[in-house]
Image (tube, rainbow, N blue to C red; front, side, top):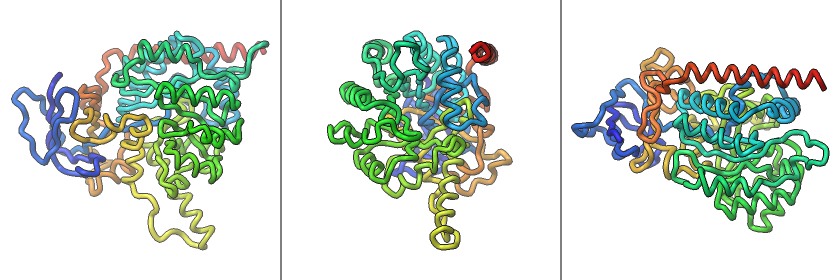
Length: 452
């Protein structure tokens, strides 16, 4: 594997021991070998001139339904009830395996283009093993680092079938994947579970799925986005010692203080998707309540069918939404605004990097620029007019930068974007395939709806 020296950049390491510095990074065998103000380049190393650039760890998108990439915009004006009806009981049922493949491939390539090097792909439209394998093929062909969370579809039941809330995670399919293509936890794409949890399933299913995750030592993520189907589920599972740091709750806006205390004390992580939560009437994003408890926060873009999935937008939206909530609370309690900002930009940058990696169980491999970790590195053009001059690099990343500034993306020491251009050679044809897939799905959906 090629050696690289990234020379002369403003390094935002997100490593508490290293901090920020002006300097060089040596990449060897896909890992960060050294970081220092000055490094001597090995004779055969390729040099990347990073002068005038911010060098940062790649973003971690901690929650995204990548299979919806071909449906961009359809959910732009929907609440959660409209979304569940039209997507899960409608559009999702018209996806073929090849639709999942092209959506995951192009969606992952877009994440790379936007500066994300690690994606948590919450895949819950896999009615057959073929759909699952296609989803994995798309991620693997893109070159992104990913945690693939194996979920389950949510169509309306046919006569004689159980409602999806009564159907546990399919052990046989999970074991097929773990014994075969997803056996390694050291691969670029690793596996976890996208379970229903107390929010969306009956207690027997909760018990089965939580035990399966514990038995197979896998991360298990679940949505809590409205009234819970099993209101006392977390309490009952805690009594059986089935809660732990391998679990992740997405959204959680409706959790009571007692439930939140229980989950935080158990080490459960949380993924906030502020923009979709505000649009779809989930309630206040959980960010502030988690911060007060010392909870583990990660952030994600959520639905490709609804809003932008670049992590610049995600991080900015999450940060400013909570700052706004804190200001409103101050007006309500004291009749005046805040004297000081409640959340610094650097904290929000942690949510989008090292804290997201921790949620995915990958913080020993990625999430910060630390010698020994995988070389998941992004270079931003800080001389661009929207960013120059850089006074505080963390603030520049959070509040000034955007996708147009992403010059270079490296994942595991392999370049995937250089000079502002994705290096995936067949992109135009793949985008055409995505458009064709989208048109056919929408046509089939509209035809079925008209015939109903």
